[in-house]
Image 1 (spheres, helix red, strand yellow):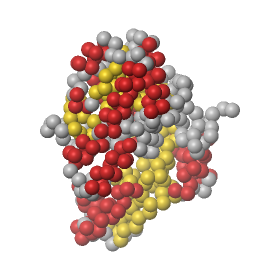
Image 2 (tube, rainbow, N blue to C red):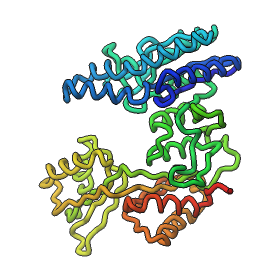
Image 3 (tube, rainbow, N blue to C red):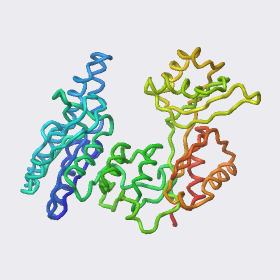
Image 4 (spheres, one colour):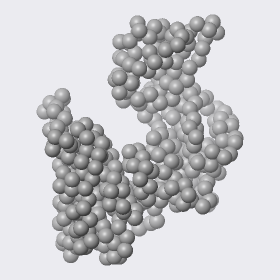
Amino acid sequence: MARLVLKFGGTSVGNIERIKNVARRVKAVVDAGNEVAVVVSAMSGETNKLVGFCRDIAPLHDAREYDAVVASGEQVTAGLLAIALQELGVSARSWAGWQIPLETDGAHGSARIMRIDTAEIERRMKEGQVAVIAGFQGIGPDKRITTLGRGGSDTSAVALAAAMKADRCDIYTDVDGVYTTDPRIVEKARKLDKITYEEMLEMASVGAKVLQIRSVEMAMKHRVRVQVLSSFEDKPGTLVVDEEEIVEQELISGIAYSRDEAKVTVLKVADRPGVAAAVFGPLADANVNVDMIVQNVADDGKTTDVTFTVGKADLALAIKVLEDNRQQIGFRDLHTDGNVAKISVIGVGMRSHAGIARQMFTTLADKGINIQVISTSEIKISVLVAAEYTELAVRALHTAYGLDAVA
């Protein structure tokens, strides 16, 4: 007998027929002799509708009441799935976040999990009852409902799996696993049997939308084995595991891309100590996340240009913050470009192999693709290119690193 946490996303529970399909899948896992907890998202589109209601009534709404409204989507799904399981003869009970309780901090709309008391759920699971849990939500210090931010149901599932020491957390979604790159761009993309936490975290951070970043961070911290599976097909998925579990590690595991980038260049800033703090301090205070950074010192040695990237959604705010602090920073001009894409090569094999960066740069050069900005980590190399070259770059790199599936 294994203890499993199963998580079903919005498309998996998008209507009544799909909820019934999920119930049949859960029953099969229960019939195999496993203890099961299920975490559900709201039906696809439901959270957006609820968010819209709040904004239509008051653009600057009370965050506590916002959480009370948007958390209701998951509660509806949990109740419906529990009913569907009961109809199949499976003992099941729905749980809202506050009933567990899943305790969070008080940051309404983007709360972080502090503690989960799983004693009662575990007692019932041992008796054969399936716990159907509303994801994305918890209870704050003020005893009000809190939500964990978009994609928070993945985080709920991994956190519950860690708290109850589950053998595995299965994330059911509309894809059947983690691929070497987006199959919509590269037909020869391969599904990976296993991928490390570190690689999955890097892929999630640079555009791959299979798993939410916070859920991968939590899985890595607590060593929760995660499996990504399709809700609609009975196929093997992809296991996200510790590096030691992968016997033959690929040199490169995947090519990721993000079109949600914008480039900002601050021109002719005095080249003096503290200039970086003057530029990036106000942006941090405004919660603008800065990613890739490059600095070029002018020939006269007195001024410098600073180029960096922000999310496209933050571009307008970044411009405003910089203009508001123009006198303090002392820059001459500001250039922005929203027509860019970030392309990333990811693999733990980089740690022990030279020449990965050269291969990337040579491949892009051969295709006539100009690199605007470069950033690296221990297992990732990212470059910024013009958005029009996104698909060409991804395909070329996928082939160059030998990731194409053999026909």
